[in-house]
Length: 161
Image (tube, rainbow, N blue to C red; front, side):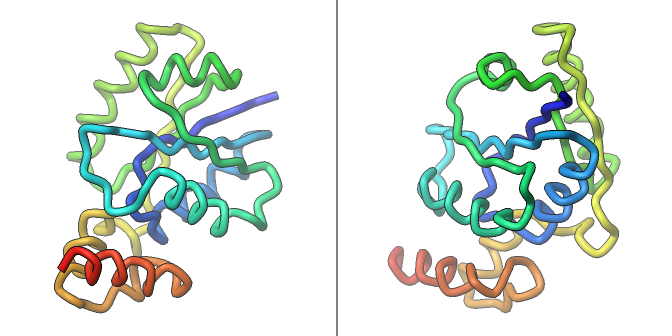
């Protein structure tokens, strides 16, 4: 059985993330969307909120589960029995960074392989950072995230102000 993990902070989850999740789920028997609890980052959404949002988006994908983790990805992968890391690439600049991380993970555990999926062209510019930037100024984020999350995102900014 091929079990993979698609790790990230997903703050917030975007159409680009969902594209990678959907495509990756077709390549493996089980895909775990691993939501990193990075205490160094000042997240817009709490860890439980991010997990819940991804669960909403993936409820129609039977081989996808969502879990949060702390610490090293390779340690979490050993806990859940995954051997494949899925990463999305938007541009060549993503590749340089992701290649270094992939090689470091493979050095830590030779069983781990990283699979890179290129972003669909229509999402090649999209990141959670862009969503937050637009939302913080009240911009239109309807092309970036599902409709059901838009009010939640704007609400976070109205609470901060």
